[in-house]
Image (tube, rainbow, N blue to C red; front, side, top):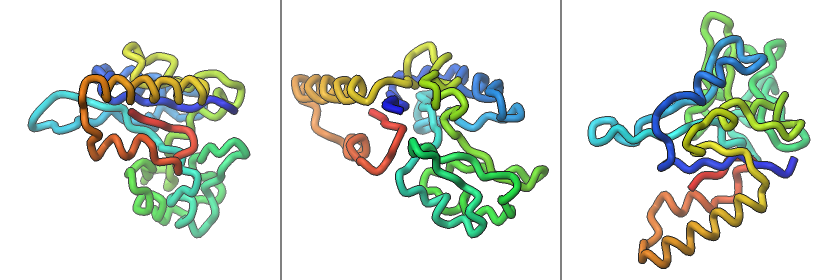
Length: 180
């Protein structure tokens, strides 16, 4: 798979179409596995999409004593396998992004798995396929690199200095989700 999820937070319009589409994805049992968060609810209504960052060395998988979180050959970090998950919730505490959620009724963890049933065939995840503002895109790695280059050049032309958030956009330890 040479495609990646590309997020542009400032494009998010807060419509939550990504969440609705996620609930409709094949094996999600009507539960959304991505979220729309407020940047600062007290100051603004600006939102941003939040989903699993698909880390190359995921903390959620490292802290799972039952080895229930599998990583595909392509590097996609999947939700906990039902038959292995013991409900310890280490994954929810270990993830620095707070992504894995625990279902107390079913006693198992679930999280965004980039709609692996779709992305393994180069079909966009549900969230990316419905995002009206292109805040979430499933694009080729090279296209993502070009978008980032253009964005950096535009910022330099406009005289913007790199912010703390800009440092995160170039951190290489995330496999499939990149943000600007």
